[in-house]
Image 1 (cartoon, rainbow, N blue to C red):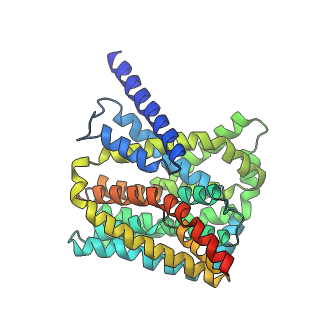
Image 2: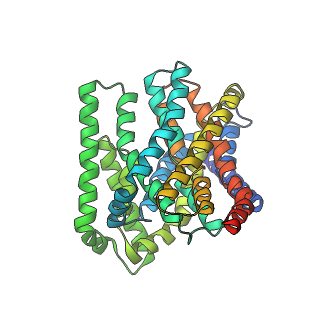
Image 3: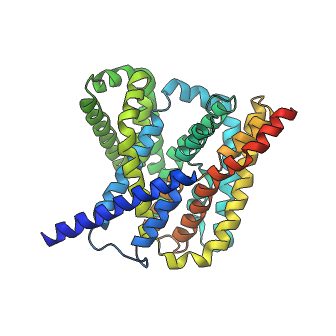
Length: 386
């Protein structure tokens, strides 16, 4: 009984604290993700008040948070839009991959962390935070701009790249041989292909099964299906998060919109828990030694993402102001970067990788939305001159 009481007290304190931090972030006009990470650092090993009994519960909540994040992201697109978007923006997507994966990989190799850590760090610096980027577009009124479809197509390309990348990283972290690793990646690619084919050809049957006029039943069906597919994907050596993303793609139209509205509060709750959990795994005393390196890496990533957005928007015939907006929108890092770093840390990669990734994400998750607000007047002047 005493154990349960402590569990409730700790969880209540954590969730209430997150609510206060979220309110503070709204007032200041920044993403709450950096504050959630800081909260995790405060409650983790080496923090101010380490948690005693609730860490295991929070770990499970964190896994659910990742699944719900990717599920709701998948609901933003349908399979046809996904295929069309990839065909039209494949070249810009490859430029994005090369420019933004390279800094992390080069950094790890120069530090002598080895090839596995280099592959992990490549993922950490590559992927833009879809959630924060979408919030920036919405908050600043950029959703209806001509460059927004270009930004979204790059985010989709990154998410699908993750569908290939995560099985490769998982195999490397597990120390599998070349043959076993190739089998793992082959199974992952086959699984992703089958799910996409089902979404394209038979999505209407999935929608008919999930659809319900009752919001409670709809929520239970969508979350249950996502968890089932995520678990099956994990068994097949595909990331559970990617499985959930593909479930979201299989649903479209009004059904997807209804599911998004129902899932939003649940997603935000568990996503906050996820960011806290990553902070719990990071010893704050290890951050100062890597802070300067993280800041330098963040600066390089800002430049490469800005160039990526400008290049992609220019190919689409967007004016100069729109090109700058596209580049700025791609700067934030968040959920996927932390997921990748969390996998690497759990598998025993280099001990400095976790603190470096946490500090890197803290900088870009906070500065990305802030940069968009700061350059808005400059972008307006560019548009006026044009």
